[in-house]
Length: 454
Image (cartoon, rainbow, N blue to C red; front, side):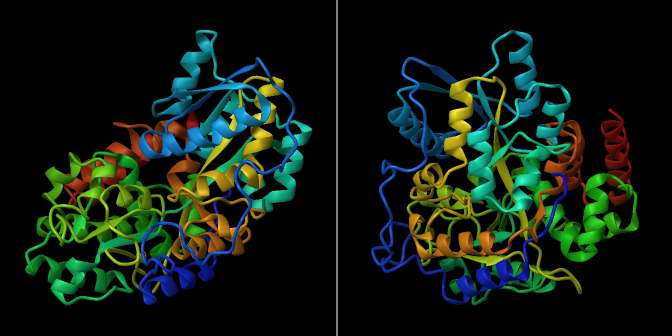
């Protein structure tokens, strides 16, 4: 995403503290509400001022499914309760820009859409689909968000997006029983990570679960390695395509990634199995199939907690987390992502919903459900259900503007955000044949050059 930044080392330190402390989930040791947490006001408590919208119908499009859709629907229900509006959730498909284009061409665009890529915001703004934030929404945005998050939702100085949901995409979750049985501890470096994986493999458990059926998970693998190994400056350059994908730094990162992808015994189901495993299954299979699970580790963001909860595993006891390991001489990386609400209709209802989503009132509702991080600095940390999530959320807010945003989300969606095409497809091919570094680079550069020209 545009002007990507990186979370300060305070985030890494905070997550490291979590790992060292066993990632305890409050007094109950699990992922349920922490009874020792300070009280916060109920979701329906008076807060941000909203207009009466009785009789108005609002359609909201997002790619969320399953628990994410269910939790977002709770936020929309509270908005309905406060305003009298009727809100309909419209399931969208990736790439959402193409989905919206079809809706607009058919004369039935949603009122509001949740865009998961900065590139999508830029693309939609260039098509003149988006409506600027109104004064009430802009006031909430200015009061509750750091400049970095405000800038990510703006195009050419005009504010269009409100980042409602954020993510720390540099976490490795692991099955504690599998680690204990193999006699291993949390690795700090990439070299140690691979050694740990080999030891776990020797114990009879598949070390790493990879959701290769969803190409975006593979971009996250690459980005974390690249940020740590090549550094923030090169990361920014590659995100903007001011250096090519044929650059030696890309070859180095792909070669490093190939150290994992090239070892069939280190990946649950091997490459073929990984390419048939979607993200939710990559998480759940790590914590199901016996005490050890069908895999020992899975890499992905804080939002994985929702999927872990579905298995019955308790975060802090059955499931723990450590920061993505540092690569070579680099620092441990932290990459963030996020979903921004934008208006496609200039209506009272659309602007009121953006105002609500920019307030701590809305964030508080989903925060209480878990599997959610908010970049809203006005949100009381007590809203989160356990100490694990409160600490990760605090680190995100305390980072200010010093963070790097998901690289693929900064790029044109045709390259960085389309299933079966561009970076997603090439990295899936690379998972299957990790020895073809030069070929992968050539395909990445050809697709990137075409996308950036467009």
